Image (cartoon, helix red, strand yellow):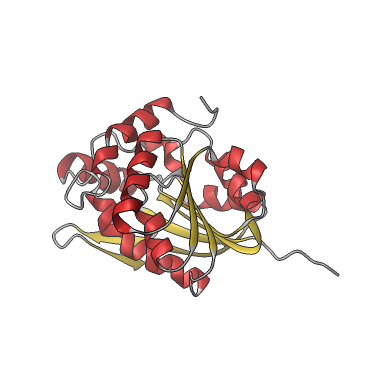
Amino acid sequence: MPANVHPAELDKFSALASGWWDPQGELKTLHDINPLRLDWIRMQTGSLEGLSVLDIGCGGGLLSEAMAAEGAQVTGIDLASESLQIARLHTHESGVQVRYECVSAEEFATREPGRFDLVTCMELLEHVPDPASVVRACGQLVRPGGTVCFSTLNRNPKSFLFAIVAAEYVLRMLPRGTHQYEQLITPSELAAAARSAGLEVATMSGLSYQPVTRHYSLTSDTSVNYLMATRRPTQDLS
């Protein structure tokens, strides 16, 4: 078992694997948020066409396939083998080409440093014991001048109320126990980890959600869900 993983988290998402591609299933919020995530990532890069992309914590491949359909050459990695099996099966149905591998971000970074134009790490950091270790791996995996995109949950009373109590127990948007409050990450903590990993914070946005319409939109309010784009500086060759 790799060091930077909660076995209970792997078990949790492995149990949900068969429902990854069901837009009305237990992971329906990921389907609702995926178009917005894709649009926001595209805003950071200008275009995904021809980019070499790594999707860390890819799960069943929702975002990986969406980026590949935009013309990116996508690799998806995850430690939940059951989810990767679903992801691979779905590529046969969709015809969208994605390379999947069961490997940790840290191990992958030792093998393929500086290879990717874009690294995405969405809704993962709050599920690992050492988020900073994953952020460091992201900094190693992206090429100089490349972009790393994160999304996670803030840690404060409002996020506890909205992201855990309301989302998991009242509205049943997510399975109960999806998030643990103490594992949530403040923007300042993520920004500090990014800077320590040699990444510069470029922009940050919050997300708002309308449960009746199941519609997500970008906002300046980062108190609950937020997205952070970072960049690895271009090396000074002078």
